[in-house]
Length: 173
Image (cartoon, rainbow, N blue to C red):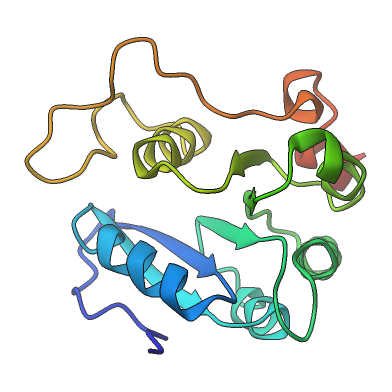
């Protein structure tokens, strides 16, 4: 399965997300879940493909697995950040990993990523984190037919972002 482009027409104000996931099954499941939201989602199967797709800055956010074929997620994120410096735009990057944050913290900080989501992923958590990063009102990024996230749900911010040393400070200082 390859979903390079979203089949859902992009309406005005629709936020674009790049899903970089190397596992075809996980990519298919996440892509199908995103089709039930108000986001337009394109998929990359490898780190190299994700970097190439980000070159024009058309994405509002990248949701990236740590383990990608060709170019690992952290290396791909660093390449995206380098391109941003050269072109002058910024794309938030959220990392997904089956490892604990402590296990990926060094790569997370070095790649200047914005947030961490543990695997197996909780799709409601993904929507909450994306909505908060993109500055959307609560409930905007919910699944069709649902009335929001469970009470008390918290985003999975890494200490880097919470401490003000996340991607924004890595990129623009």
